[in-house]
Length: 438
Figure 1: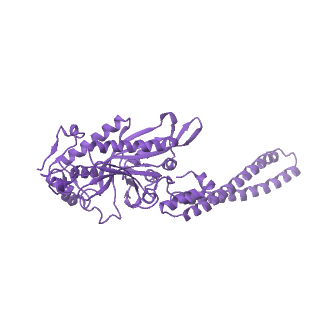
Figure 2: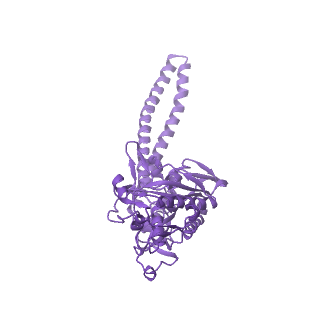
């Protein structure tokens, strides 16, 4: 959620953000109207409630006077006055109840509209759609396989040759877009997990193994029940959700809490299985393990002062680059365009690895600055010398296992179908230097 004061002081800032995202600008007009209606309804309730309290202060003494009346005339006069006030109180109580219900309804309508508004974009983000990103850096040189005298195999063929990936049995057991990692493939994922956690803990991040089922409040609070809802798995019988990233349970970890500013920043590295329906992606990456329904991932998550968020964002990107550098994979860093941001992100950087058999770069990690957006929704605040206020949250993928495995296999393959293991991974593979065909 965005600071409501911005709606009242600078609604055009919200309109411009919506325009840059390619989302509804008229939604802000509706929000302005709803905000006024809510405040007017609340004011009407407050006025009637105060009137009710004032009337109550008159009734109490009159009831006492009635009990103490010395003669019939005084009692009759007091009773008559009391009857008038009690009738007014009855009518006023009904008005207060109606005004309270009206204020609640106006507040609910306003909240429902706020949930449709995405975070304010960073004005430095490029404007446009998926293809309008800006390349910030290119690292490494893609191999010239033709010069080496052979045509590269794709990760599916390599996975079969090495006994590392079994897609056919994944489909047999679970359906399309599922797979097994077998033998060296499974060991490779475990090695990636260990390398990622070794790096994360070396930088002071707290390792976490998170729940993969969460309540609706956690999913909604992180912004995954808006534009991303179609890709979320819901367990209807229990009204719970399977997470598509451990960002969700990591964000919810401190929900409804006030954190002392002296504890910030808090940095976590969460490992979890992740689940995505991939709705609307039919026909895209149907071959292989690039776009699948279940995968494992190490996600970094940060709670910090809002004024420190941009520096933390740069730090997360640097740690992602450090990890991919260790794997010796060519990659590029892009500044994601506003129309391709998730609803919670103010700015997002993606790292894309070179995939030789596709002749293009594909996303393997991303990092987003969500500013105060998620913290406001999840009611997470910080306390410093100036009082209590929302903090900022950020997230960054350190390693999405399947896509990194794809990049590793294809970039480090040899003519005979073997794959050289990067030195950084070898300690976690029992010293093994090469994965050979079975």
